[in-house]
Length: 494
Image (cartoon, rainbow, N blue to C red; front, top):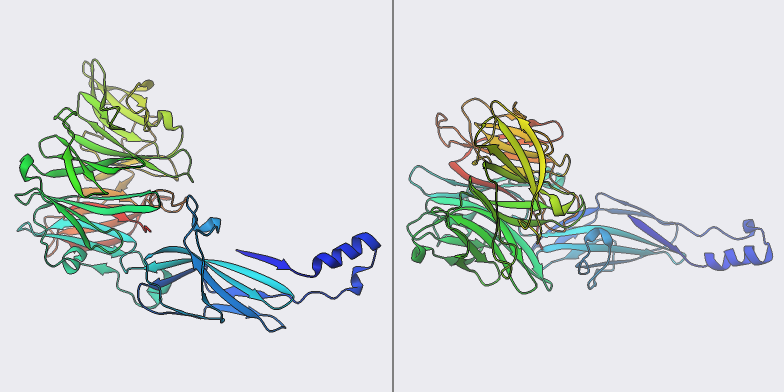
């Protein structure tokens, strides 16, 4: 996007407006034309960026100024508001080495003495592992790996950049060995301009080790053990953020809920929550398709739904007489006060179902409201179905019996698969290309399905990529890893 400022033109317009002078007597200011190969420029950390992708046309000699900086607090690159700005080149090209990973605003200013032209770019200073799909997996002996499929730009593809990394965790952190990996999660939150992002990896290695690694580089940040609790983590879901703390919640193998502090790198049991939780769900939602998102922690079993949104409020519970909880799912965006749908099955009539709604905000599980009632002879959903909601349709995609189903939430769940995987593949986990808090409206156009095929020779884990606009598999990575445990999309963070 460009903004042009013309000098001398103001005086000319005043002369015409005040004195009625014919503007044909005044010369046209010499324009500047800028053509860029792309509005996004990628640089590797610590490697000199040599960039000459801008073509400038002007009949007069021009001066140049390239400057960059982080977006101002509460803004994105698209807003073009700098927190601070630094000039890095005064020539038509850039020859500069960046020393901090992140996404920045890059501005080119060109002046030919009569006109000034500005062009703005998104500058990504990359670690090499900034964005892509992560698959946590184990071999037959329980040795864990973190397979990474890098999201390639057109520039990367043209340059033959490596796409698949068999085990980024092991290659970057050789002193640490994953054993019987069980769950994977990504957290990202900024408090007072400090970013607390990280990947959490849970294991059943005899110590219940939780690894916290940097989301940008996969480098180790901290290691915690659950040995004193006699259990291990099996499912992440949900967060609590405040001006002084940020924590991610997870469920243990024996149904307890724990919190991992992303600032200080330690874990603690939430002993005020009943220790009988079957599922821990991160309810991803926002007030609109372009608003910042939140991930509310929702815990449930067949009898009750629980939320713990603040430390002071403590846990809140909802139960429904005469009904079993089948599963829960959040709308991706909409009315935040009523955005979590609870699917209930009548104990007296197993073909009779209804939904109840509650909040996915600070009012979660404080109250509920009646939704729809319907009859289904053969429901294609159970308490183990994994839910992923998306912006494009506001629908939820979920797993059941090695197929993907689709639920609009305001009607009965579908009884026919929306997406089928190839015969022999067993679905383990699903994820969307969710781009994170305050990342604008990009992403969530793809669904990733991690599968296991016991009959496959060699590596038995695969990844299938679904285009959500047509609900079809558009790409596959077959035999890419060992037995999958979790799949997430690792979006770019600052």
